Length: 138
Image 1: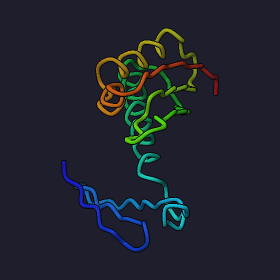
Image 2 (image 1 turned 90 degrees about the horizontal axis):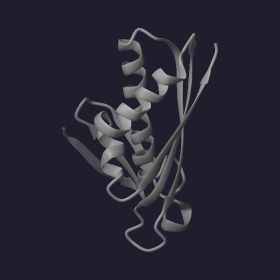
Image 3 (image 1 turned 60 degrees about the vertical axis):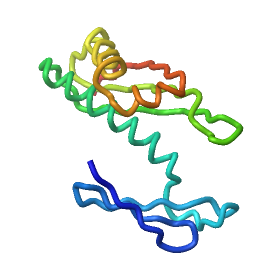
Image 4 (image 1 turned 30 degrees about the vertical axis):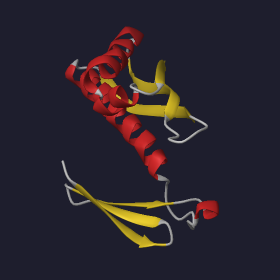
């Protein structure tokens, strides 16, 4: 996997991923940024959310469950001193589907957390990660 990050101006940066996509990042105004894009740590948290949501949807689809929506709400706390790593992350899943069984969602969340989600497993080396979920009907 490759990525190139280029300084743009002020404290904004543009990343070009190995798959050819661009992602902008910017700092807070008090750090010299202009608040035009997400912070790098926000993208790290979003990446973990995307990674685990991908897993949950794929696991449910492979199990032939009728999932129509999956949302993950992440809340994170960071250390007060540098390096300000994530120390706690809660991932709350809201999964929507017709006749979707809570046991199936719970299994998918657990498999993602313990086996498949590289991003959240990596973040789990510094942060206590908790998971919760709810099932909604369409």
